[in-house]
Image (cartoon, rainbow, N blue to C red):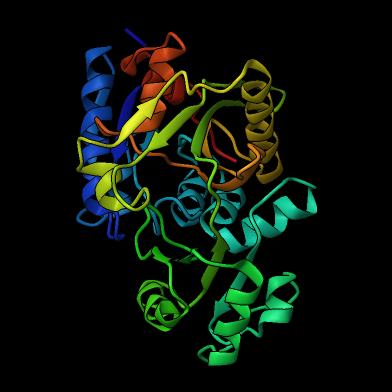
Length: 325
């Protein structure tokens, strides 16, 4: 037996990623119980946080707003209940792709070129990261400037959503306004990002402080136009290569960059850092996920298996690092 006490597995929630979170939570719950943990499902969309009285730890298997953005982490900190994953600030920064990019830029880490589209941030200021968004829809001149700066194709995405929700790949300049409108349905802050042709990779990081482990990288090869919501969770023809096929030197570089991005955000416990490669094979940090998926299609469990850690061991390891800030 272990000494974790009564553990709540937070799942579901009210974000756009609720259904994915329910799958993650069910998998984590079964894994913890298989190792003798007194684990119980807890859905904050249907149960008040006051019902956590009597729980000794919380495993956060929530995704998106309300569970991965620092708000729940703040509540659990005030309640003095140890929880898995990053604290308030790191969670909030990672969830906000724009501010995450600003921090990584300041730390000297490579990121794809981007622009803040909305609402109403003028491209010359937004593209350099100097301006906060205002309340005006982008003009046609701003859309044209985005294409001139980033080229085509490019990606339009909400700044504070996960699982590729609201993300649109734009191949024609005429499609930019519609893509913006789709992303803006999910968030009033919208990003445009340069597309890169060298492939998509991800690296999971476990631990905190100086004691970090970067798991083997995974190359993601979707059969769809890009790695969208369907490809992530429902299709069986998305290919995941682990080992990823990188050279030893490139693998080491990507793992080091993942740890650097993790540290810069102040992450703890675990996270997953996503990458894009350019045509020359140079890696760029795309985003960080502080509460990654734990479904049967998820990437952290896959990398852990290749690294010699089975799913129940992974869940117990994460739970062992639960903390209160």
